[in-house]
Length: 369
Image 1 (cartoon, rainbow, N blue to C red):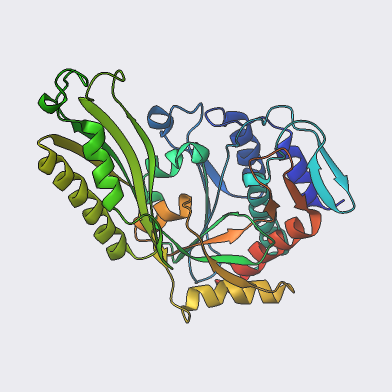
Image 2: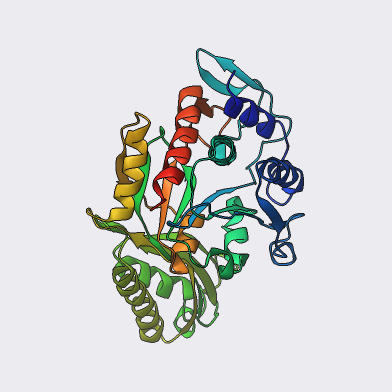
């Protein structure tokens, strides 16, 4: 049994549901400290509500080169307590009614192993920073609370937290806006005096009917998530709350769609004689690398060094990588071998786990020069 596999099996045996990452954080801190890194935890728990801060570890470079940030997250979704991993035909799964926890403990194990190897082999390397966040599954809480100073000087951040076989490279992820819109009309008796009322539900419906929703183009989506309102069947609804979102790999496109959705809601309210209060939140900024970007080429070369075929893809979902990119740090997210994540049928191939550790090691070697 390989060391990275041993590490992974130990990690998944540690309960770390979102908000309770401290035990897992201590394990990772001890492993990285033993490898020669200086380790600390930040004060983000006051913001995130976790029992641990984000873990930040540093290894001073032994040679000139690009500072690399390696990142994953400490928390897992439920049901994730009492995980008992089993290995059958080279595939790891949970033996019980729990997730496995490859999201994201496969990435964590690969980072630990990659750092161990370059230190043990005496490989010349540039500065290495490891960031393991809390509360990722609750909306990237740890990453959002991380002080950007921890990422200063990084030439590349690599977040090992995408599904799929090792070698996957996320070259684009979206800018994501969400909203809560509260429509206000005027109540009246729906049978006796409906003309005296102004239906908040009707104005919300008119706005939604005018919106372009779903997949708008190959980079952009929009959605209405929930609609709640009214008080009784015989009352013209005085209030209605709508939630929704829009996303695009292109930041300007995301802003255009946001403005259009906002305009349509305000126009519908005004035309009906009501009003609407709309609260927009930018969940995170997106990123999109060009086909010839040398940083993508660097990661692809590291994959090829260890016999793994790299593949680029884009995603409509967000990760800690979006937060890092929003701080101006060039960031790529990599597949960490996990499949069927967030379910009790989650699996991880041992081969992918070992390949992932190989890629981390090769990347740190290539960052010199």
